[in-house]
Amino acid sequence: MNKNDIVITIAGQPKSGKSRIAYIVKEMLKVYNLNIDFDPTPDFLNEQDFNKHMRTDIETIANKVNGTIIIREQQLHI
Image (cartoon, rainbow, N blue to C red; front, side):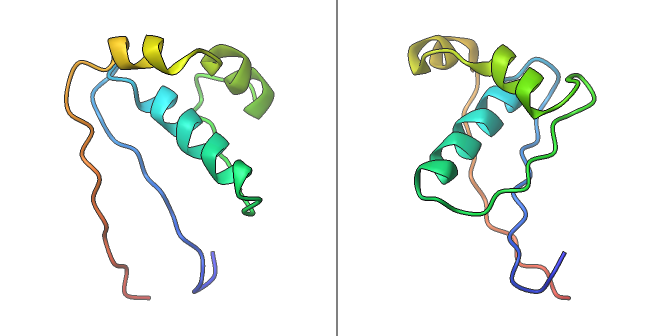
């Protein structure tokens, strides 16, 4: 990791929708041609396996996320 990298961490309870939110964030960043280094959880073999399982419409995702999505910024002092 270098000084200019941004690390996005998505945290939550099991089955809370973390992977689906990660998928949305990843796909949106790709739209803007940003350089992305995606590291799927051990639940998936690789990024292609992750994508296959996560492809779904936003309405389905919205129905699965039961709580509030809290977005926080945290500054690291490197």
